[in-house]
Amino acid sequence: MKTSLILRPAAWTYGRLMRWRNRRFDTGRTPVTTVPVAVVSIGNLSVGGTGKTPMCLWVLRQLVTAGHHPAMLSRGYGRKTRGFHHADATSTAREIGDEPVEVFRAMEGKVPVFVCEDRVHGAQRLLQTDSTVDSIVLDDAYQHRFIHRDVNILLTDYRRLYTRDRMMPEGRLRELAEGAVRADIVVVSKCPYGITPDEAENIRKELQLLPSQHIFFSAIEYEPLSIPDLNAKRVLIFTGIAKPQPLIQHYTPQCLSLRSMRFADHHNFSQKDISRIAKAAQSADIVITTGKDFSRLPADLPEELRSKLHVQSIAVKILFNKEETLKDLILKSLNKPTP
Image (cartoon, rainbow, N blue to C red; front, side, top):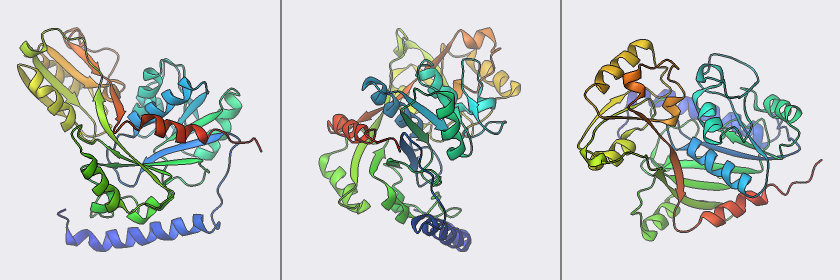
């Protein structure tokens, strides 16, 4: 991996500060609060997209299917508000963040979704708000160690494993790779469907996990859109996500032609952006965006854009027939006695 040596001193300093911070938690000098329900944390060591939101949805669906009553708690990255908020059908990305809106819509409002930058306060408030909740799924909380978690799920991108990365700002790591030791479960995300057992075994060896840690491999699964004769269609894809290339590669061989418009991750679409997209859509038959991006679009889209727009849902597929194993590991965390 190519890096800038100029940034290495800053990366070294940041890494040592994060090590010092983690040691305070490890030794109990910084207190950790336990709440009276099971907590499942999903996060990563790096910045950028590793597929946390689709993984959150996968976990929430497993819990609901098993008869539990989970809630999701997020900090609400990118929102313009602060404090504790409970998502509802009128919530916008500006109020609670794009990912909570996406989760609320994907779960059809059947799972309560909350945001709070202070996860301890947020967890306590949400339990007061909804007494039926028996488990909390924390989104992007690997470094937020102030709240105890019963299962710590760490995601790492197949194309950029944390063992091959460097600390910010030289690389994309939020903390040193040694932080992976806190994970109960490591999921190598965004794998190609053709990954072989031998390749998976080589990755497992490279990560050097502890005997107590479990590793799984997952791939992105694009839920089919109802588009007849897609192979004869001109497609426009616009995204404001960290890594849009897999989506673009998914549709390129399926359509007559494809044009993409890429914006920064969590981009707030302005009226000028919408005008640009609408203009590009004039020469397209179909327009596709992600659920995360759709949550950030204004309600008053031009009709010529809205009529062509399709929202792509993204799911997680656990590979090597290990879905039940992963589900069972997570469900065991819910067998937690009330203090």
